[in-house]
Amino acid sequence: MSPIMAVLAFFAGFFLIFAINYALADVAEAHRHRYRKRLEQELRLRQKKLARASLADRDLQLAAAADVAELRPRQSLRARLERLISESGVAMRIDQLLVASGCAGLIVLLPCLVMGQHWLLGAALGLAATPLPLAYIALARKQRRDKLLVQLPEAFELMARTLRAGQTMAQGFQTVADEGGPPIAEEFAYCYEQQNLGLSPEAALRDLARRTGLLEIKIFVMAVMIHRQTGGNLSELLDKLSRVIRERAKIRGSVKALTSEGAMQAYILLALPPGMLGIMMTINRPYAVLLFEHYWLLIGAGTSMLLGYLWMRKIVNFDF
Image (tube, rainbow, N blue to C red; front, side, top):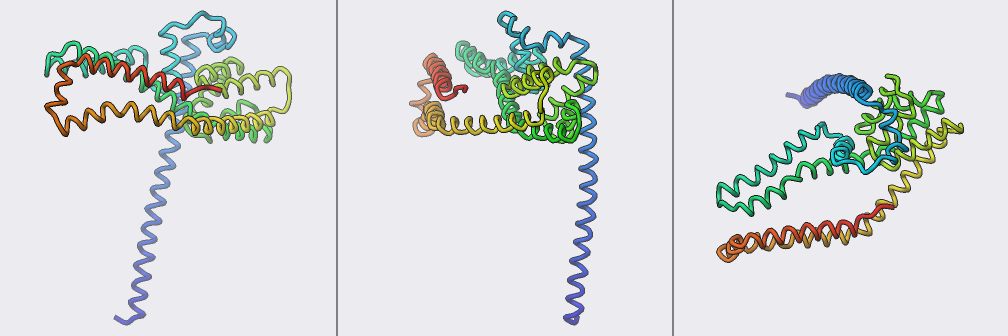
């Protein structure tokens, strides 16, 4: 084969592979676009169903009012659990959470009873494992709230641009629901559907603040409600609120950086006892196994470590 034919064959193969790759990429992009559209439609339908259910089951004009919530006596354990699950965004009911907690305790208790007939150790470990589903819900709430805080400035700026274009506040909510990502899109879509189904904007906004539990959203709701009564430039207000949230995020990051040393010390102190026990089990197993014959010492050590963790967590975490 001549050099010219070899070069032509190379370029022919190269462009053939490029064309096939381009066609496959186009097909994959079309598939992703259809999948994204279907997810958006399912999200809207889900938010409509939730909004209809909320309006059918309770009077949100009273449930979402901040002044009524402040005048109520101390909330019951069930109300606090409902609020925790609602803020976490996990699709779970209270009865399901209780069942999951009981199953977690039994899963840890049964092996201790079957293997060694250690009732006290099994009961202690079972009680320690019972709050694990609740801890998962609390962790999911923290992650969701952190993500909401990251998304809020961009959402407020998007709403401000929508208002400058001559749109209404409800259309600004719809824009955030369409353009934003979860969880901010879910919350704003839910609020928008509540208003479409007849709930007043004030009650829908207060319910938004109640569901998220964020101070920044409470400030936003208060600012919007004052604006509805007194008037003013709402788009400028949203821009300023976006800047305030970013400054609070910077302060929060600085506080986290300053307290990171204390948090690292706490984690090291918590990991040291089980780490040393694992090392002793590897180096001198008969010597370490003697500790399990006095399992009440393990229970006392675990309780002390838990109290120490809560104490150090209280020291390094504070609000501002």
